[in-house]
Amino acid sequence: MAESDRIKWNQQYVQASEINLAPPKWLAEIESLLPRQGCALDISSAGLELACQEALVKGLKINTQSEDLEAEPLPNGSFDVITCFNYRQRNRFTHIRERLKVGGYLLAEVATVANLERHAHPSLGYLAEPDELLRDCGPLEIIYYQEGLVG
Image (cartoon, rainbow, N blue to C red; front, top):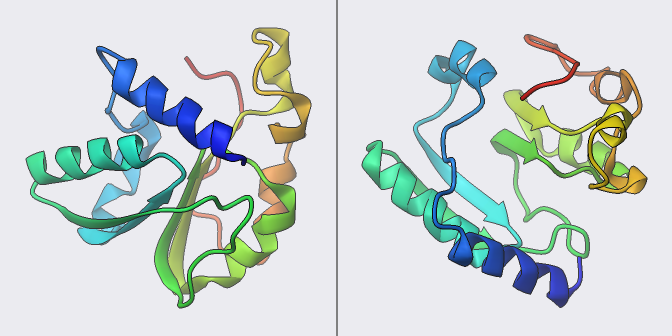
């Protein structure tokens, strides 16, 4: 993403009077398996600040790092959990899978091409084909998968 995308997302988080910080309902099914602390990466420093505030309210501890993952790979090391929400970059997915620790979790929620039936954005380049995410996760043990219209 370009610097303009960082600015756009920061403005959206700062200007939004009410942002729904509730996690997706499906996450409740596996929440007990996840660590209670960690690191969050995102292009938006404003979004990361909101994540820190919400973590404190819930008694969690996170470190944050503003990164443009379209331009830079994930930081060195392996991860217990990698999340990917509302973001799809095909050429990074193998790298994301490889950075998971053995027994780690990849949590992803991305729009599919069916989204274009109701919304003009995101554009086709950021949308997954039917079952594409499931195929991309092929080497991983799948503990939960759902595909369809949500919300």
